[in-house]
Image (cartoon, rainbow, N blue to C red; front, side, top):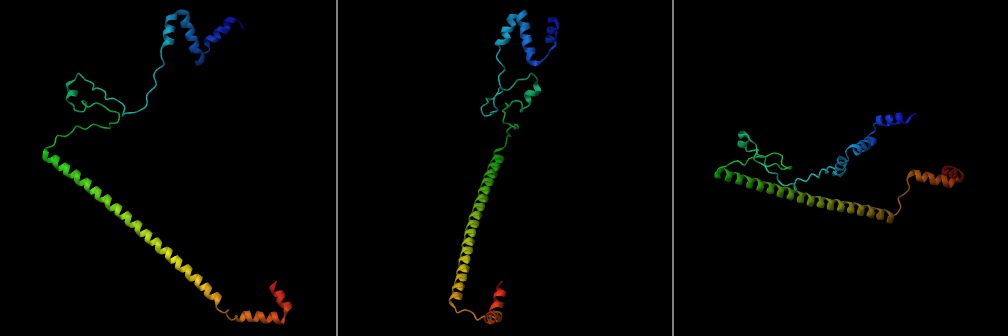
Length: 184
């Protein structure tokens, strides 16, 4: 291979890593001032975190058309956490008073509902504790009764033998060898 064919092959070789270096070399040969500007440029700034509460409101954009100026939605500045914008409705004092009363009634009913729920929960807890105490007392009494019966049975005289037990005792007395075989 000659030197010329290797340079042609290198020129045709287009890997991303080497293409940047080749471009810089070619700029160095022909225009050194552009290369200095190209290298001295700062890298692009990274995108900041999404924090809408830190954003300052941006001024509203003015448009030349009269139809956009009449639209009240365009006069509101955009915030990142706003989903939609609503223009405040003009209400009569009577209607506003009715709305205020309705809001207060809603709040009061919500508080009453929460108080009822809390009272029911407390009542349930008391019932559960009483039920648990009753169960424990029943268990204690049943255990006491079982122990009492065991002690009463142990202290009383032994029961008379059943007919089968009497037969076994007779066999053991009469036939000691047969009794030994039966035990096996």
